[in-house]
Image (tube, rainbow, N blue to C red):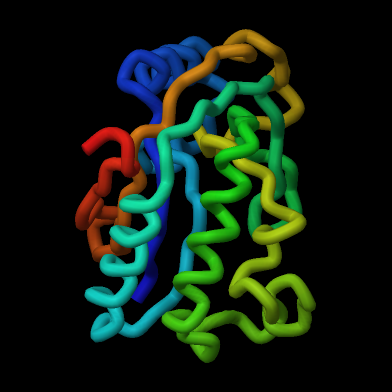
Length: 190
């Protein structure tokens, strides 16, 4: 089973992202069918470990103060085939790196290491974190859509927006997409 630990941008920013995607409409190949979010960690785990995953995230939220994130510019990331066609909004904030590290440490015991492609297992970062894009290679962003990369300009239209991260969520992949199971407020928001 696949799980995702994430944060969500405030509704106003999420709407701006949706509006921006509409403005480049003809160059969008496929929206990613996800509500705007930033993945802290994704993992394959056994369904019977779900309660443990939820408890670990709850404990992290109970001990972490809210922090600020800042939007960067738009960028293009590579898809699974190596093509740079995933349109993203980059994020930065020192508290986010700390949250990322804490979540990985707390959830590593739940990773179903056998439920990954053989090629992934050759990567040293993957063997340490369960993903080739975590730890020192973690690059926080909001994934927006697959696009015609040669026609999309990556600019700074939404750069410099600050927003407080006040909660973290746990989502599970189901047949009809990702479903948020639960969200936890960070410590000072209780």
